Image (cartoon, rainbow, N blue to C red; front, side, top):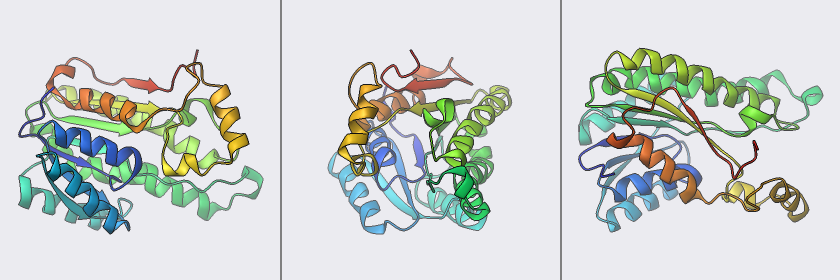
Amino acid sequence: MSMEGRTCVITGSARGIGRGIAEHLGEEGANVVINYRSSEGAAHEAVEAIEDAGGQAITAQADVSVPEDVEHMREVCHEAFGPADVLVNNAGITADKQFTEMSRAEWDRVMDVNLGGMFNCTQTFYDDIWNADEGRLINISSVVGKQGNFGQANYATAKSGMFGFTRTIALEFAQGGSTANCVAPGFTRTDMVESVPDQVLERIIAGIPLERLAEVEDIAAVVRFLASRESSYITGEVIDVNGGMDL
């Protein structure tokens, strides 16, 4: 599944799942654009990790909820590597609160980043993906988008919205030979999850048939396959990587 010569833009890729995806693609020979909003140091560390593995990477600062920032990110990508072949919409935030206490501002902020950011990035890089030799759009959703989660009405709504968006764009991209797919991870071992109290984490793991959290590599490996030419006949799919939580 070589990605040699392919240019990949991964939003929110300075840390966590996004960084794992970026490093996997870089190891396979891709030119990688590490996007970050505020984690500049971590973004440069991700670039160094990819370069140490023999790959090529650059950073691109952008708040994906701001169209002008995303346009600038596209310019940075084009200047360094040319048009993008692969766009991974991974950037997202949470603002958890029981719905009766959730403010409209907390609702809007999650929508602006998680859905609005996906819209902005896809619209900005649409022509790149359309014109690429087998372009790829990959949206990172969540098991929460399928199952819901207490205190996450905004996040769950945004993540489930990715499903309909992915399937619709897949129909449009199909005319040009490019694909769009969605990956819905379960609970993954990242800094955010590891900060969850032990008792809560134990209950989460008890509800996973495989009896463990996902590792970042579990998610990144699926994205790497979808980004490769070997996945050319898969489009419009939502692929669950959740240890069997839907069983």
